[in-house]
Length: 167
Image (tube, rainbow, N blue to C red; front, side, top):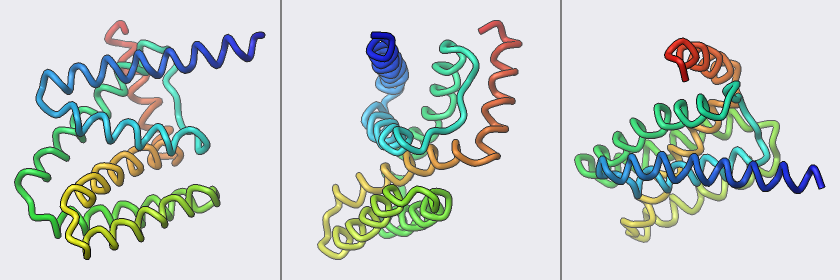
């Protein structure tokens, strides 16, 4: 029974966190970008794990601080840069993620599949597909950072700063 309660509380916690960050992003005008990036990061995080804040409120705060600027940047790049730029940036991010998740065989296959799909969609001229995979690559990269020592250090520092702010 305890495992079921933990699972339900985890799912509810993630949903609440997503809805709060998504709502802020929606108000700021880039909710779709945030949704795609956060869901992509979550899909990678499920089995890779990663650094955590010490409290749920700090986690929500850090998540907003971490994902919202990158979502805004994704929208900016999407609007102001050509498809070729997004294609090559996403390939670069995917290859960095591949290097980070090298010990996770399943995710190596998943990320490599996204690389192949990105190449296929680019040469097929699928503008929407390449844009989506650009956002997915950002989400994967943001999560991949969390399984590195740099990500752990970043979370530790952010957790302490947010704690000092009284959150």
